[in-house]
Image 1 (tube, rainbow, N blue to C red):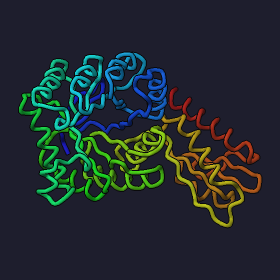
Image 2 (image 1 turned 180 degrees about the vertical axis):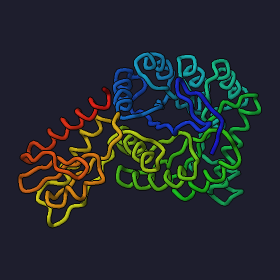
Image 3 (image 1 turned 45 degrees about the vertical axis):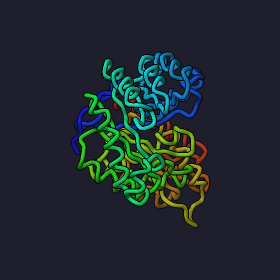
Amino acid sequence: MKTKEVRIGDRVIGGGNPVLIQSMTNTKTEDVSATVAQIHELEKAGCDIIRCTAPTMEAAKAIGEIKKQIHIPLVADIHFDYRLAIASIENGADKIRINPGNIGSKERVKAVVDCAAERNIPIRVGVNSGSLEKDLLEKYGGVTAEALVESALNEAAVIEDMGYDNLVISIKSSDVLTAVKAHELISKKTDHPLHVGITEAGTLRRGLIKSSIGLGLILSQGIGDTIRVSLTADPVEEVYAAKEILKTLGLRKGGVEIVSCPTCGRTQIDLIGLAEQAEKIAQEYDDLDIKLAVMGCVVNGPGEAKEADLGIAGGDGVGLLIRHGCVVKKLPESELLGALREELTRIRAEKNQ
């Protein structure tokens, strides 16, 4: 769905631009070196926008030094103290995330809005199921999609009434179906870009499932301009998951797509370990746009891998390197991953000629 364009640093969202991936640091923002190191890892994984919390004035001021050392836009996450929002903007934040309802009086909210307007910094208005106002909980009888939408639009209206509409809206719930319905409703009521995610999704396994279902249902309807896969895990895992969700939905191309067969009684190799190692190697070749098949049977591997650009298969000490279903090299199983890396490097070199 077509939303307004919003510029965040050197990136543009909305207006039909590609959906961008966001994550959040879990370091102390005041610790510049640790925060920069984590952001560099996230950049390498494919993160497009990074959010850092600014709970103290020291953290807000650290944003300036962090910005000098990173290559993606930085969003400052603010709660309660309007002065931290202003300081974050003054120290170079490319966007701020606030909830006007917890910033304080109208005068304090306006001070933040005026500061953002001076620099044309977008404001993300964030509402989630745990922050709904008491009157809306009473009106709707609890947390509902309708309550989330009304809350978000009310908060956005506070800023719009101050003459500023450079906004991004996020409405999040840990309940997948509530989140999906809320996004369906709000997409018909506003053209502000939407940041999408299933909040508090959980640990790596559970969170991946919930986020994949929720984001899949929302994004497949054309709703959403930025996404975050919220996991109780290393933030790098959030980025990897987001990339796979976007690729699966056809919303992002590039990178090595891996298909692998399930294990079975015929498997004579550590197929799980082989697939995991192949996946790690493939992450180093994100500039390629190919399909890699990882097969656990040297008998059926070539046939099963014929739809892939490249394939590997192993079993009983033997490894095969396969191109479009044809065996191009037979080698000891112990040399299989090395041969895969060499072939990927060769494909990259051919691509860059």
